[in-house]
Amino acid sequence: MSIAGRVETVKDLETLSVQAAELIADHIRESSGPYRLALSGGNTPRGCYQHLAHLHQLPWEQVEIFQGDERFVPPDNPDSNYRMIRDTLLKSIAPRGVFAMPTDGTPEQAARAYEEMLRQQYGASALAPGRPLFDLQLLGLGEDGHTASLIPGQPVLDNRADWVAAVPQGRDEVRLTLTYPALESSRLILFLVSGAAKRDVMARARAGDQMLPAGRLCPQGEVIWLADRAAAGA
Image 1 (tube, helix red, strand yellow):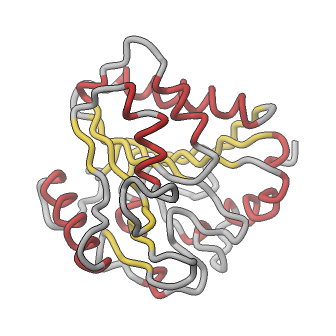
Image 2: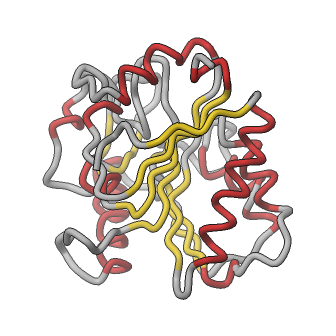
């Protein structure tokens, strides 16, 4: 599948948050068994999680929640992606399972532990085409073209052997991230993009610009870009 996917344009960030929550909810409702949902951090999805938490009659008992990336900080740290997800979504729902990225030991040990957990949940040590690891992978897009914690100029961009990797440089704090193979093994990738500052980088990523980490994704499933008018240039 192409990273270009299809673009759905909405008025503003608030509308984007509501529509993203409804889209995720619809996919959960349509599922017939365990539903693996990988969530992103950052500011853009915060409103989506708040709306999702208050949608009624969702079969959360079928949903397993994972993380796409994490800052290597304690889970109660204000910079923790898990803390943001917990405070906006998890405190209001009772999912089948929550699989947070560990942030103890060394970053490398934490990455290996999360990868082993993913392999156990997947039921195999290698990802198979046509059998996605995740049902829905929620991703953001940075002004530098990063997605998850696939940061420009870092060795993780060339790591296709592992499913999870530590990213020790490129940001103020060490990160953990799913690598390209794990991100790409998704039935649906949903990008949330907001703001005029991301207009150019979104267009470049959708065109497959290999200079951008997001542009190097080779998704196996469907891709939807949910963007506000400022980001979409509409």
